[in-house]
Length: 290
Image (cartoon, rainbow, N blue to C red; front, top):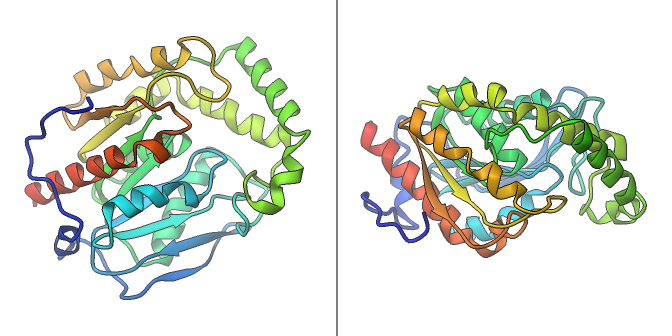
């Protein structure tokens, strides 16, 4: 919850660099380039340095630029790794596979290409689902996880919602092609984007996501938004967020670090300090365990 007193000693901007001994490899200089995976290639940026490696996992159709305020809040004492998912941004290439499993595989491909073994995963929205799955499947490689207003187990997808999703993306497709050269919208068809969103709805069901979250053994912290998001109605988002009560009750490794006032779409812009604080929190916990 926002403003709660922390029981740990907050890491400073420069302390992250002292916490990676025997935990992972490092590179001394910044690197920007393309990482091949399957039938595509991803645009990746790695700040390098000896600090704790943090990989940032974007929203479903967002780009790595969304994380710049969080990265600025954390400072240069950390090793920041960002990338654009398949067909997102200006440079990442198209693919025949935009499935969630492909998105999880891409994390492994990026980390392998950058020589990173253990990492702190931070994901927003769709990226929070990727982060939760990756942390659940890779307990020995996960320093911690920060889940920003996503990965909340709730059965929100039904036939009516599926119809609404498809209708929304058909409408958005009227102007999205105009924005594709800027990197602001993905180079995906309306059907591909709708299918990705519908797949996420199935993965969000309590019977699907609940066991994934229950299996996380690394320290994990949620940063939770308030109000609505693009495409939501009424109190839909708050009902989804309420599902975290059960998650926290079942797994002592998971807590809510902050409940902020900004909505889902603005949280990385307006509440970057809260996200950065959650990163410091889980990093401190991992250090205490070693």
